[in-house]
Length: 208
Ligand code: PRP
Ligand code: URA
Image (cartoon, rainbow, N blue to C red; front, top):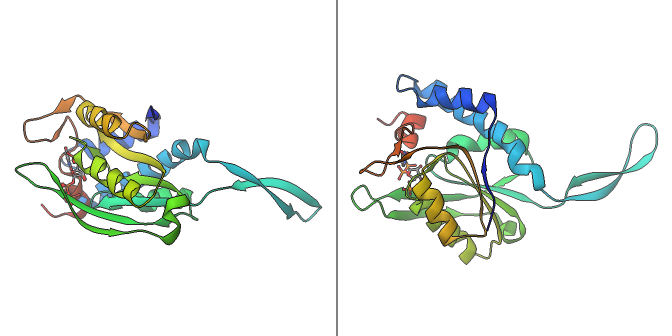
């Protein structure tokens, strides 16, 4: 079974409270999501493999460490985009791929409408980014899509997860590590997370 990690840090908790407040406006909402993304990058990258590299300091030659594997950030459009720049600020060498997916509002079944990945995605560590893990349908479909393209090393990164979504993702893809800033109580009858933060895509991009 992959890891399930709630990234627990006072700054993350504080910023998460900011974005849960219904009065928080688009600009502040977006900035706080980016900042949580950067803070989470530290924990997500904890077990990234390193390799030796010979370099020269102003004083002498020395063998030091550098990241051994390419990192690809794959946001699920739209809401996943909100965390990309924050993670990139910590891992600037990361490449970015995209999966577009929306939940059919009546059936809650995810529908894929776009996919574009860097060429070397199969040998990379893929950070699949989507702030909300509700029923888990979108994340499960995105992981299935990535695996069908040959990706082996996938970590899901989100902000707010419902227990139902965590369970479903673990069941469908037990090899995927799950990182979230919060594990909330449950889903409501419309598939929204309680207490959650509402519709993340709309709040990030001001569409409602
Ligand atoms: C939201 C969210 C996730 C999905 C989570 O996307 O960004 O992708 O719902 O729900 P699930 O776990 O039940 O699949 P939405 O369909 O609202 O699209 P958007 O990002 O374009 O707003
Ligand atoms: N997607 C969201 O944006 N919010 C939820 O609470 C559930 C799914």
